[in-house]
Image (cartoon, each protein chain N blue to C red):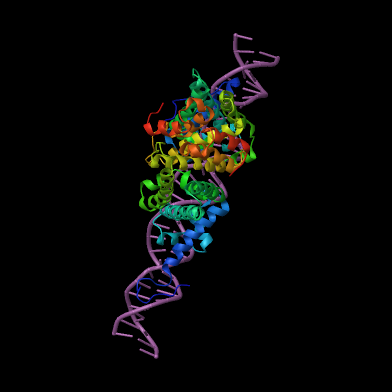
Length: 229
Length: 229
DNA sequence: TGTACATCAGTGAACGCGCGTTCACTGATGTAC
DNA sequence: TGTACATCAGTGAACGCGCGTTCACTGATGTAC
């Protein structure tokens, strides 16, 4: 219920309101149908309570619309990871929380996740790449900052891995867990925390050998215990 | 999309010939167009040099057809992994080769990979699950056998991880590398071998601490060198 | 104040498209006599 | 041996569908005079 500003002479009624409603409807459809192909211009218009052509007053075409949804979801993922990291005891804990939050986000919104990381991005070819790319880079950079803090914690004498490569490794790892679960929900997967600690624990021990009894063997022991902390 | 010239009608007993040609055409289209949505009944029929309705003499519907393609591709993936493993020096080497072969297979046939591991499997809901499930289980079981041989090699005193969980971890890892590259080909990824050794090396060191100087630190050093063996 | 007018968000009808699928059929093939 | 017939792989036309997108339009709104 935003009152019309007298200064904005060109904006009659609530022109931008429909734009927001369209994006919200597209997202709703994605959630409800859990099927990207069900998100059509017509379905979105129906959901908003408007006819299909009026979508085109706010978005050049369908790809532009979906790109805006992608951008929005990227922002939300980033926010979810940052929120999960808040209050972490140390950088290792922070990565652990972020990893778990990443998987949770993907499993809670599988079609959103699909849109971000499991679809062709041909769409972007002919359009403005910057929006989604910038939004996605935000989350990646935040992750890399955490990784850099971890590397700073590495025991003396331990060579430091490249933060960029390590960030990619972490992303790739949590993506593997998330996307295979989304694609093959019927498969008898081990517990999420068990899978995540299998990824993280050997690295923790490698970077902080003093914290691990007898080097890397600690990782195996911890995992084999089934303890998920 | 040039149709095969003047196809000869199958003889009485050779009804299965077209079936094979249909499957091959579906696969060709997947490879050439790199787009699952381009693989339509009509396009397949055109490619074979036949009209669309004759597809239905050999497959109940489109989903059944695609399921057969999936089954075929699963078999091919399994064969590629086994071939790559042949001649490995030891189980660790075998896993390394299989991991690399898995990624190579996915990147060489991205749309096949998509079909196996990045798509909704709703299709399977109303159809016979057994074919693809059995074919997929073949590759998984072969991988698990290798994992079991690795675990047998673990140094005395090192607790042995559960082979099933470890197999899932490896699969998840190589899938993460493969599928993110397919979904985001524009991203500046590190070298494949660098990514794979980041996954494998800490585990190698953890299971065989004697082979690593100063415990897990060896993994970091090896990786930081950029040496990809 | 009332009235004429400009603005522009949203409409209704239509377009051409490719899709999966169906149906009655055609005509080459193999076989029985 | 030749001929009639049954078989059945593949055809041609059509179905209804939902899609993205276009176009000329309508009619409520805000403003100028």
